[in-house]
Amino acid sequence: MLTLACKKDETPEDTTTGKIPVLTTISITDITHSTAVCGGNITNQGDSSIKTRGVCWSTQTNPTIVDNKTIDNKGTGAFTSSILKLKANTTYFVRAYATNNIGTAYGDNVSFTTLQDSSNTVTDLDGNVYHTITIGTQVWMVENLKTTKYRNGTSIPNISVNTTWIALNTGAYCNYENDANNLTTYGRLYNWYAVIDTQNIAPIGWHVPSDSEWTVLTTYLGGDSIAGRKLKEAGTTHWNTPNTGTTNETGFTALPSGARYSDGKFYDLKNIGYWWSVTEQDTYTSWRRYMYYAGSSVNRVC
Image 1: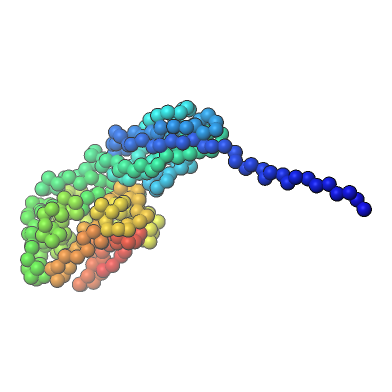
Image 2: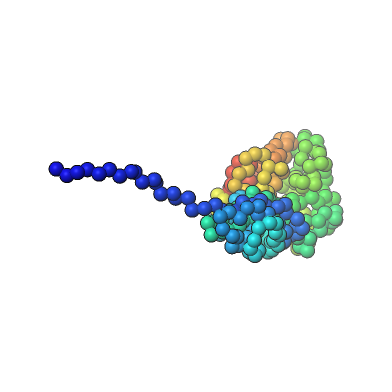
């Protein structure tokens, strides 16, 4: 027989390696169409000194240092960062970050939208100014059309009465629900006859897109099924909830302006945005596009 000795159990190894920094993100200031100023405040460096600090940003929430970032020296306390090379009229999310030997910590999310680029504009005969953006090889207006005149100066009738709208076979426009308060945000609604009128509804140098030009746009953005989230205005200020996953990374800022149907009634403000093309499908219908508040696609219908 052998003697038996007993040994006290070992304490489990402590796997804690230390503490990461503690910091907050400061408010965005000095926003332009391509730049902004942000920063952070490091209130605790953690268990080792700060190696790098700055801000990181993306068009998606919770950006990290694998996204765009600045590097703003070392140390604790408040710091500011200049964010450069942004796209105009685009919503970004920003977080301050700080890295020590233990790891990287982040402040809270702060969002902002860059200004529209006033150097790229076009003006119609009514004096309405439209900002423009380039997507791939195409240039598009950001705002929906608001003109009350064809290119040659001829007035387009404003038709408010349902029965008159139904009977039309000439060009006309209206405001949604005949309410001028909807004009500034959503633009005007036009019937098919105004779109195809040979007097031209678009400003000089511009035209209503064809079906194939819409297809070029959505193909460039990865296809119909995902193009909508890149084109729609982010958030629920104008779109009904949920409008999730929307980035407006193109700056197109598509809005849910609704429509006036053939019965003269108004539908879908804040739910759906509809856009004409000049391409006829047959004698009675044309190809159009729409985007929906609960989806990420650009839908092709006639």
